[in-house]
Image 1 (cartoon, rainbow, N blue to C red):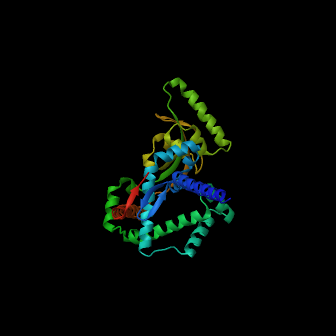
Image 2: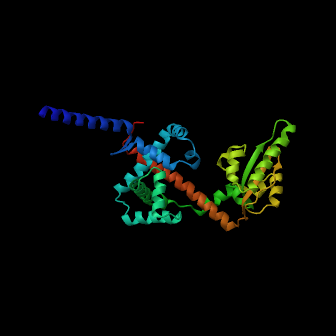
Image 3: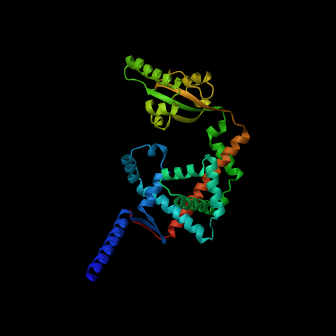
Length: 318
């Protein structure tokens, strides 16, 4: 009887040990940052949550391939995040329960989510409620230390702003502009094939009139790289427009779509997303000050993070 009991205990111990070893193999440590570790599961969970909508739309196998090709770069980002949080704690900074609750309530309010909606959204992102609280707490902590150590020391002088305006032709122009989206069909190699392209464009126009979304049709039909992101062309100043675009825009109001028109590149369908009024000098200066401040901030922030890395113990095991 005692022998059987001893053998049973030994079996349980071996099972627990094997399970623990398997867990280590399945969730290995990929980096050590001072006294803290970053695990493989943590790395991939963060990559998943930060993935773009286009990346999330891929199949699981395709998404994993993209993640694997970016493991090293994303791990470096995660190491930088960990170093900043450690620096904040070393300076006595913390995040109160009230601050954390307020941040969560603001997020729910911004996206009009109930408690259940919020938790369902977290589950889709691969986070438990407690995991998300921990991640948000770290983000707030980092925001505090960055504001204290970097952002609060950024000064964009009048001379620097004036110099930036003088060097920026596009900024100085301050002219009327447009935010546009486009569905584009390449110019066929044979002139006789233009009718087939026009028929394809007519099909798209019909779908737009039927209520289908412009960005989705751009992803499906547009024959240019921007099509994959919904055809967004961004802001284009009026003096930068091709003659054919300017002529098409004359008859458009916001959110309206043009008739298909040809340029030497191919056949275009454009949507006027927004008309931008000319900027006055005060607006130009304000925009320049923001850009100069951002450049100074990025320079200081990069140097600060580099200094944190130089004094830290970092071991990468990826």
